[in-house]
Image 1 (cartoon, one colour):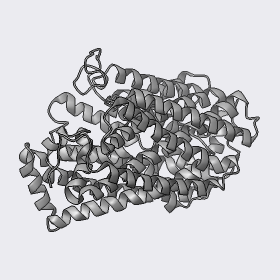
Image 2 (cartoon, one colour):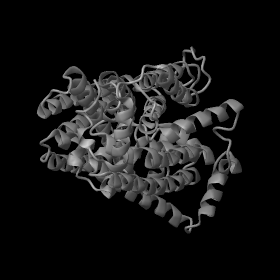
Image 3 (tube, rainbow, N blue to C red):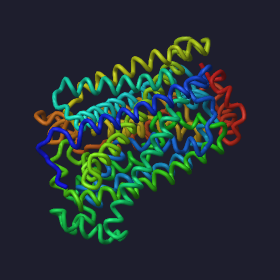
Image 4 (cartoon, helix red, strand yellow):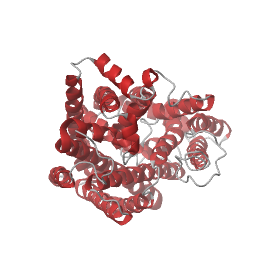
Length: 539
């Protein structure tokens, strides 16, 4: 079977749209059935804390295994071999940080959002404002990247090449996302994540088993064929193709790894999912389930990416629409024709839909709970009104994501994903760790850490090769880059930790801070009194 590069779409648009339609209908049924039980703020924000550790662990894996993880890492392995897998390894290690430092303590000390944790022992309004700013920034950046990616994927598979047609696809994707959130809330979104995660893992198993069967279940034979097919030869199987060319690229890899390790436990839509389980034990089990599922899936991605090199070829992949992101779809087309391609593409599409729904509900919850309920209304607001504001915010965030996705058509949106991880790791991780484990940490330290890390990460990315000064930049014809690294994590993350420490040492101590830290420590270890965390925050 040959793959035509001249065609505007891959596979049959009729088959693709039929499979897409079936997946969309199934997920809509799931959302509408789950949404019937949404009656309270807890139902909308945290699904009534009714999910088990296993269920939430599958949903966590679904939240994290985005299209970037599936298509992006498979493509990176196909083109860069060993170096392509390094990013996945860093991301996988990041879940140990979530297990050991975040999951149990966050679940016991908060209620709905990260702001609940930070504001318990500090001044409520400024800290909640900083938390909401970080959450909204990370969520919108990630949201735009995912929606733009979904639009490009669907446009490719349906043969849509005009900017207007791609904009219509992006609007349709965004509309579905808004329906998921408005109707299903966290409960509907979680069940969609569980459904999608199972589909993704089963599809990965089918494709990887199919590939291994062709090579007699001998991975060495697959590696040998990949090395023979790649123009890089045996260099594909060793380090250096992507990150080891220069000393600067090695430093950039360290920076990327730092963001990848601290990023998963810092992303707002991941943090919020720890509130959907009834207790800290289930929160820990959630992360354990996620670790096994994500680790197993990355092993499948290694096989899929290597098989794409062996059976399709890096040159064919890079000349195809979507470049390296087309590796998995092209391999599916090579193995099983239009049907398998349609299934793989539909799973990738469902992956994007589920992730953007999770991002949207997180952003809306942060605004409604942290900004509207606790800053504007000073905690005096009816739960029904708060949920109404959350739904209105979800609509606004969804429309913003659609507009951003349309503007990003034809752009290199990978920079937005990297920026989201860097901002999350820079703004959220230091303040969470200090708040949970350092007695002297105060409001000044939190504000310096969050705003400082956030600002430095954004500024350095704007003036980096990710935005200008290179052929792969978002603005390839401009050059105002003075920061040489694509990812700012190696600067912004340590600086954020330093700013948090300096602000805590030189800033004014919070009233009754020592007593509140002691009470927070008890809650972190036992969970006693966590439901009162919001009402007892310091003004």
